[in-house]
Image (cartoon, rainbow, N blue to C red; front, side, top):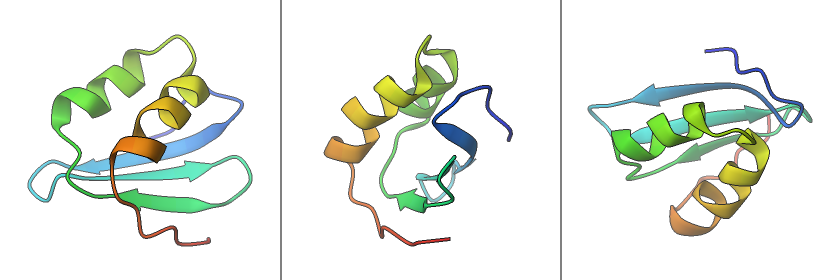
Length: 68
């Protein structure tokens, strides 16, 4: 899903697997594991998606750190 953000280009959540895939404006792609649906919903609702993402997903959930 496209996201209006200067830092995050798009995101996709797999609710069954609890994965949150985030593609940043730089082209880097991360797949965060064990992300509850409520956390993904807060990312979408956050005023600053980049700040929320760097303060939550990047530090609280494991990621495979794939490069696009």
